[in-house]
Amino acid sequence: MALTKDGYKSRIIDKKIEKNLKIFGAISLEGPKWCGKTWTALNHANSVVYLNNTSNNFNEKKLAQMNVDLILNKEYPELIDEWQEVPAIWDGIRFKCDEDKEKGKYILTGSATPVTKDIHHSGAGRICRMKMYTMSLYESGDSSGEISLQDLFNNNVKDKLTGKVDLKDLIKLIIRGGWPQSIEMNEEESLELTQSYIKDVLDFDISNIDGVTRDINKMRMILRSLARNESTIVNNNTIIKDVNEDEDIASKNTVLDYINVLEKLYLIENQIAFSVNLRSSSRVGKSAKRHFIDPSLVCGILGINSETLINDINFLGFLFEALCERDLKIYIESYNGNLYHFRDNTTGLEIDSIVEMPNGDYGAIEIKLGTDKIEEAATNLLRFNDLVEKKPKFLCIISGLHEAIIMRPDGIYVIPITALKN
Image (cartoon, rainbow, N blue to C red; front, side):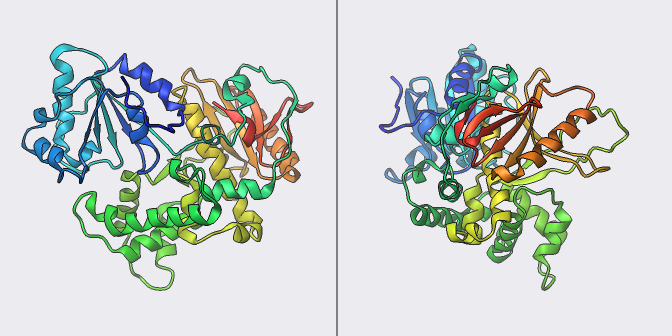
């Protein structure tokens, strides 16, 4: 019987976990701390080993360090929580999966990519690696789910009123983020939780990940630079220049090392550029768009509250884009698809999001907080449609304050983010 916790909110990834436990000997859930990996894993596990359990003086971790077989002996599926604390567990589970070819034996959870030479095999074909994020608006109950990505790909969309969305409510969703612990919190509480998270990262995680001592102040400056450039196409040289604006305090190698650590902690992620055949001789940009794993981290790093965002609508637009692209990534990855962005370096045309299915079908999406920018977004989408040889399955504008799901006369859908699901 699964060890599901009381109060567990179902996650979109649950269905993929069920599917992959029937295909692979083990699965590995990877993602940032506090995103809900352990509770989700318990929803599919019949036994559990907590390597970070302080109540028994880390006894299970000590057993694993002596011999991993001493902990790999419980009812399947067996959950090994924070397995990266003893990296040899990876090879031990890979070997166990080879013993009898039984499926669904182990579930691993980890909040950091281990930097170690103790892992000798990739686990390909035995261990399925799955990325987990914070909660989307649909998972947290803040989206009605009246329209899905699948509906858009299938052209199965009907005009429908969805109700008024208050700007203050959208700002609250950005500041609160998708952390399961913060779903019921008010703005002040959720901001304090996020800032505590960041403090833990600075005080412990940036050095504990590989045993290398790192400068907290330098990492704080890098975090602030990344936060100020959220949802933008900015290269590492810009970050380096930003960090060294007043004085030369960090070399290029140091900044790149610190950014790499943030990636290994699953705190930042790049939205890579879409590869597409163009009808013109335009040059497609290859630079990635920068994102924190959740827009609430930007608010915590910069100390942003709702009053700040109300007075800076331009930056609010970037954070709203980050919120939408967090959700789009969760939704499209439930189909094993990918999220991209597009930029034409010749004309400067940009498309905020491209969602692509495994079969190559894709949709082009512009993201606009208010309704005043919808015509501009529609013009960009039509220009993009004229530019590409392989046409998108749909063109769509995701809005924050639109009150209905509609298809415009030009064939472009307009939908509120608070009505979308996978």
